[in-house]
Length: 429
Image (cartoon, rainbow, N blue to C red):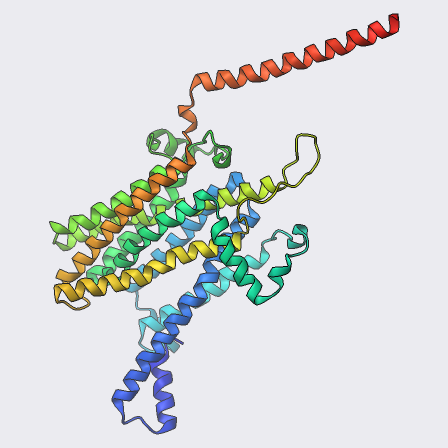
C-alpha cells in the first residue's frame, strides 16, 4: 500500500470528483503514507521479536551464539541486496511496477518476507502444553497486559542492563539512519559499502568468541579449517561478547566525531564502511546475551534436585521468550521518538532544515555522544557477566577443581570401606 499510496489517493479523488483540488490530494497522500508507515512499524515489531523468540525456543544454549550469528548474517545479506538494488533499474524486471524503483523494491521486499516467514512454519517449536495449564490471569486480554507490566520488574539483571545499553545505542543508530540517505548517489554507494562491511563482519565475528568459564556462554569449538585459521590470527583478549560490543560502540562514536574534520565524499564512504562493523555486532551480541540467559533460566526451572528427583525450582525471573524479546524491542523502538525529537531540536537551534549538511553532521555527532553512553552501560553488562576467556583460565583454578574431584572420590572410598568394616563386625558378632 505504501508504494501505491499516490495512485490510491488519486483514484479515490477521481471517484469523488475532487481531482482539481491538488492541495487536498497532496495532503491526503502524505497522511495516507504516514498511516502506512505507522502500520508497517507496528507490524514489524511482533515479527522481529517472534523470530528471535523462535531461536530461543528451538535451540539449546550451546548453539545460541551460532543461531544469532546466522540471524545477523541474514540481516546483512538483506541489507546488501536492498542497497545494491539502488544501482539496478528494477522496473525493467518488474514491468507492472511502472517506472518506479520504490514500487519494484517494495514488491521484492514483500515477496522475500512472505517466503522467509513461511519457512518458519517448517520449524518444530517447543510444545506449550508441556508448560502446564496457563495462569488464570493470562486467559483474558486485560490480564495479559497486567502480566506483561509485572514482567518488567521480573527481568533478569543482565537482560535489564542489555536493554539499557540498547536504549542509548539506538538513539545514535536512528540519528544515523535518518540522515545518511541525504547524500544522494554518493549516499547509495556509501550504504552499499556499509552493507558489504556488515556482511563480512557478521561472518567473522562469531569465530572470535572463545569458550568461557561461565557455563551459560560455553559453545562447542568448531573444527573447520576456516574457523581455526580465523581464531588463530584474529583472537585477542578483546574477543568476548561484551568487549566486542563495547568496541562496536567506540567505532560508531569515533566515526561520528570524525565528521569534525572529514568533509570529502571518499572520507565519508570510509567512515560509513567502518560503521558497518558496529552494525553487524549490534545485530549479534545483545541478542546472543539475552538468548543464552533466557535459555539457561528455562533449563534451570526443571533441573533435577540433589536427591535425583525432578523438583521444580521457583521462577525468579521472567523466562518467556516472547515477552522478554517484546520488551527488548520496546527498548529499541522507543529511541526512535527520542532521536526524532532531538534531531528536530538540533535543526531548530542550528536554523537549518532536513537535509542541511551543517545541521546533519551535528545530529550525527549527538548520536556519537549517545553511543558513548551506551558504551558505559555495556561496561555494566560486562560486570554482570563477569567471565574470562577459556584460554585465560588460571592453572590454579583448574588444579583446585581437579583436587576437589579427587577429594570427593577419596571420601566415597572411605565411606565404602567403613560400611564394609561394619558389615564384617556384625557377621562376627
